[in-house]
Image 1: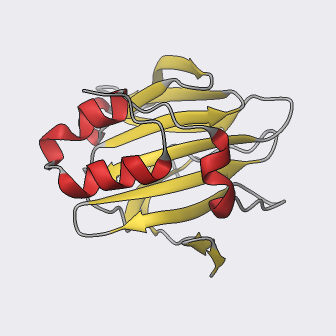
Image 2: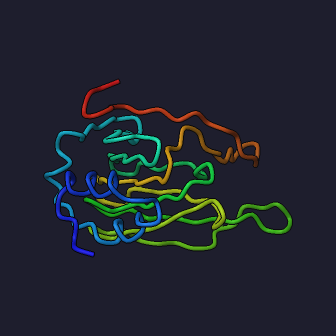
Length: 174
């Protein structure tokens, strides 16, 4: 497969492809940061979820992270998820529930620009954290949109369903 060198090219490939091709498409992304400029939106109190495109087959979300922003431990409503590091440095921490029902860390991955990671609920759960000295951006490709997910509540030591929303859609604040 040819390298995908623009956001428009990525959207075109995803729209014209079957879900079985998403993994090879994701592995061949080399998109410049400038392509994401229309979708960049920063929040002070947490990371922002910026919808680039969402249809019945997939969704592309640009997540903008300020220094130190972190997700809770979460799943993806049984959907496949690829995370492409655009800018900055992130850490992905993966967890599994052991035989006693305790959440334990099982893997830690550092993401730098151009790196890709994959997650599915059958692999456990994960969190993402901006480890940069400044801002970071990640592109999330979900096979089928994820409208809700399981979030781990550390105070209750249990998962709770959370409805997901966007801060922007197609570059416009919601």
